[in-house]
Image 1 (tube, rainbow, N blue to C red):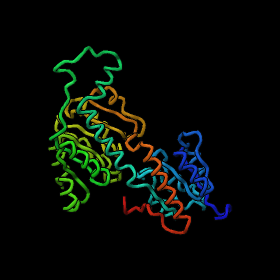
Image 2 (cartoon, rainbow, N blue to C red):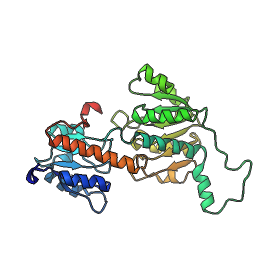
Image 3 (spheres, rainbow, N blue to C red):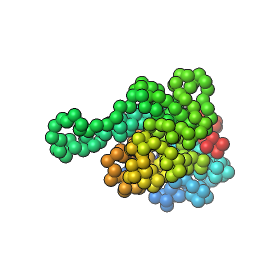
Image 4 (tube, rainbow, N blue to C red):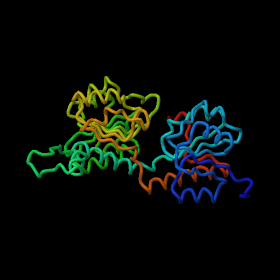
Length: 329
């Protein structure tokens, strides 16, 4: 492809070096340095000048921003699977395609779900804090008592790629798998995972020992775990969220944890992005992580490879393999 016909691509954050290098080889690319979030003005400038924008979850690509896009912008190749930060319908109405990177982080995120379950139930952060502060005075029969996860009922909210990866791991730990989904899975998939389906989310929540949120954030899942539903959860239950913070009413969850109506929580995502409810930080029965569920070197490179394939396919005149359309959301 002649240099003058190469697509002009703007990347909003730093990506793995191998990914950035390949992008430079294939396209006319503006890389982000230093690795800080683009301001609103910088994003507006980018969409006015580029053929392809490569944003991530920290970039809000809404209707107002898309209204400022130039005629050149024809593809938003998102670096990540979730696209709730992009107004896909408006983009489509303006002739702008949107692609994402589905499936890459399923195994990594599932690992983190299990880490959070163990962290909360076995009180691992409390033990680490005690050791690091030099407060440990020795072993005691009743010291640091947590719980056994084998035999517990795990309710998975959203049994897609990540949810199924969680189910396989949880079965290996001896847990019983239950799930609620927009659509019931095939009988053979249920049999493989030994999973029990609940059409009623309310009924499932009232019976589970651990609840793992693994569904995307869409208008229909906003505050899916609201104050009413969180009241259904057993006082001995634990809530895990590695999906999107908006799926849970964070204030209601905090109230339930503080009142002892929920035994604990493990959170990797938050309703208001990086602004975490300060009351959550005060609770010893809560494990908080900085949105690192998919943060492995291998996963980040694979995400970048999917972005490159989507852009390259588009540049060759074809539909990107991971194109997102409003009907999918």
